[in-house]
Length: 269
Image (cartoon, rainbow, N blue to C red; front, side, top):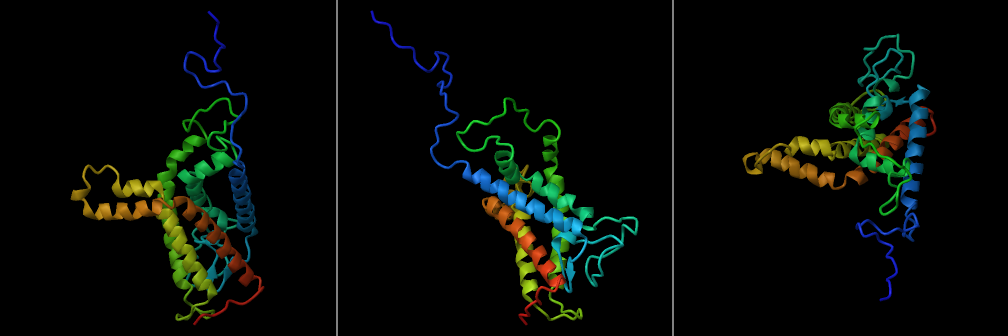
C-alpha cells in the first residue's frame, strides 16, 4: 500500500505551517501608517503649543489647550476661566496644569488603544497579520494597567468639557466684552465643543454608566433613553475621536493666528 504524503497540517489540529507572515495582498499597512503620521502630527503640534506659553488668547477667544488657565502667569482673560489658584510659583506654561486629564482620557480610550496598539506597537498591525512580539502580558502590568483608570479620566474630561462650553458661550462677546457678538471664532468654538461633547459622551465608560448593572430597562425608562442615545454615539466613536482631535487643533490654531495678528476675526453679526 502506497504511503500518503504528510499533510502540512499536524494531526494535533494546529494551524497550517505557513512560512509567510501573512497571505494578504492588499495594502494592509496603509491604515496603521496613516494613523502614525496623524497622531504624531497632533502630538508635535500640541506639544509645541502647550510649551509655547504665549498667543493663546485673542479676545474673546481662548485656546482649548489653555483652559482653564489657573496660574498667575496666565494672560489676562476677562470673564473667562482665569483664576490664579496656583499662584506665582508655577513658572511653566499654564497649559501643562491640566494637560494630563484630556491626554489621559484619550490614551486610555478604547478606540485610541486599538489605534496606537496597531500603528505604533504593531500588536497586531492588521487583521490576519502576525505581530512581531513573542509574548503578550495583556493590560495587567505597568504601564498598560493604567488603562483601567479610563472611567476616572472620563469624569475629569467631562469637567474640562463644561469649562470649554463656557468658553464657547463667552465667544458671543466682542473685543470690549459686550454681549451680542458672533464671529467666525464663535462658530469654530461651537463646532469644537459639540464634537468634544459627542466624543466624550460616546465613550464606552459613559455608555456603561448610563445602562450598566441594570437587570431591566423597562423599570428605568430615563436611563434606557440615555443609554440608547449614548449607544448611537458609541457606534461613531472612532469618527468622533478623530473629528474632535482635529477640531481641538484647528481651534487652537485659529486663536493663535488671531493672537499673532495674522488676520482679524470675521464678524458674522
